[in-house]
Amino acid sequence: MKIYSYKILIVLCFTMLFSGCVSKKEKINVYPTQNTDQAKKYYYDCVNDIKNNYKGGPIDIDFTKFRYGYFLTVQKDILNENNTLEKKLGDTFSTEDWEATIKAADKLLDKNFTRIRAHILKSYAYHMLGKESELNSRMSSGLINSILSSGDGETFDTAFHVFRVEEEYDILKSLQLFPSKQALTENNGDMFDYFECKNSNGQQFKVYFKITEHFKALQS
Image (cartoon, rainbow, N blue to C red; front, top):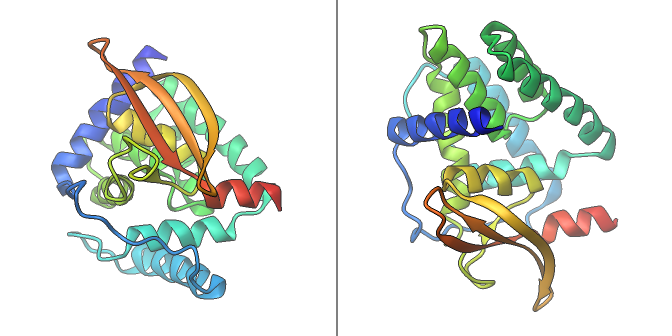
């Protein structure tokens, strides 16, 4: 686990430097009231355009809208299948089988092109093979930045807005924070995941994630 976390941080630093960071002060909109069909279409249209037409350079999409669109497509059977693909990706990465890691990441990204972890590990695997994957580096950076731009994570009012639980752990890794306690809590009608964390120097932090849409989806 220590080796895995170390590698993740290396790649996160690489992707942030490669693509540049969006300021946390740049508050961006989320789309909980957007037409469901339009949001789903935006996700699928973006994936199709990126896969077929990307030639390098910045990826000009609304990453928050993109993440929300994918969230609306998720069904429970897809989540179960994705869990199997997640395990396969982790296994190939931990054994440093870089070719297999790339293949495993591609299978997961075929199901979920918003999956930060898959973009990061694929980018790292290419790097270890002496190649680069600009697309995956820019995608992971854009996805991370879209969450960091939604708040500062310090209070309920400024919580990071996420649509899926795995995004929480991707952000904690990007901030180099290691969770020791997690709790689900309600505030003013919204649901939040609250984490107590430490950094590598032992400093303690509290981080809040707004996860209302995910919680409501679980109840439906």
